[in-house]
Length: 66
Image (cartoon, rainbow, N blue to C red; front, side, top):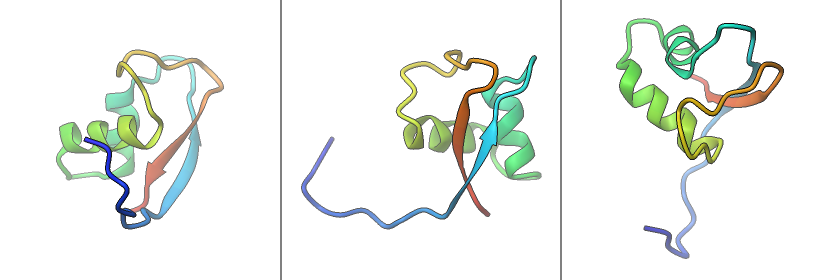
């Protein structure tokens, strides 16, 4: 639910989607040993992705820094 409250800034880095990449792959690389499902959700939220399968080669994604 959207609110007028400011959120905490999330430090991010930008990655470029490569051929064959999935959001799951990108999430796993960005937080090795972490909960990949949670990271997928964070990346989807940061990039306003309506579906986790909506990636295009060359697309730039903001990914949380851990």
